[in-house]
Length: 457
Image: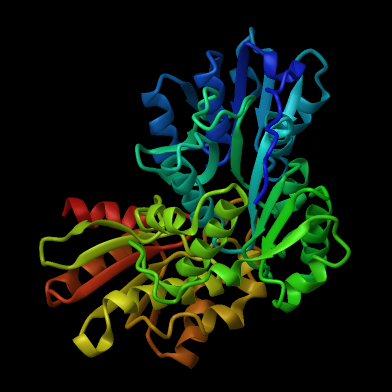
């Protein structure tokens, strides 16, 4: 669409730190920054309250991670601390200590993301749903077109990484730091630390209601984000969407409608109309950067998906297929199950068994009616205890309550008091299941642990 002048590399003093310590390093976003700092030759250490696949992958590349959090875990030679914004809730004492000390510079993960990207040509992907897939698709297109972007994504790409280091020796003759593609989360308005040249808004829905008052409050955050895009920048969205129409009023940037790039017949490796919409947004971004529709479609068709997004984990001993998916919001659940039914239809006698772990008491309670309607494409929904994360159980919501509400709509749900009871139930069911059965562990918590056990048995 235009000739783009890429800015020179960021020379911020914060980024000159030699020893960086990450608190909450197991988070999917903050761990990407840890990878980036290691790539740049810095001494990187971290701590987290628990282990997991992200932490194990960091250890494999040489990052020293301590399990269990305390101020004493911070090495004495540290000259920059980066912390997860969740620490204010789950460990306020540690948060207070690191913020009150005056010896070591401190940045939150969103602040650090802003520091890293502020002198880059930044493509920020926002929205309630579809951020990760759209970010991955844009990265796939730009890499295929030899644009050599840097990428921070909220999942793991091929090679088990959530960070791609861009190559400053660009093949298109441009100079400077190059393109930076980043997944931009709206939680607690954290994406406002980023100053994008291209902003993608996939959609806007009610979520993070433990922080936002209502949908109008959420829209106000997106409007503020859209206003940050300069007059020579672009906002890619669906302007006919009622929520987004309010967000883009009186903004300075040029609005690009991703619907102009939507192809309902596009053949992707990951099923579902929601993924075709994400592909349209990615192709719109590619067009802005001078990549032809033919090339963009070619590369987006090659996109294999990401970790925990329609991720095939294997075939069980009885022939059942096991998948894992991150869907944890009613809209995401419905779209994901529709995608599964594209491949495994009821008319062909496929049975879908969903092992779902609700994520957050607040989300489950505030969106209870929507959750109840989300599982109609499943044959059976097995509910694990709610993953509390940063919250405290006040006794007003539970997996049992959710299961009862689901049964009022589709009568296909059972709640379980713990992981072990659900595992026992599933193992007995596996003995009677035919070969046309799909088991999906679903949620943003620990539901995938059930799949781990099934694969071992």
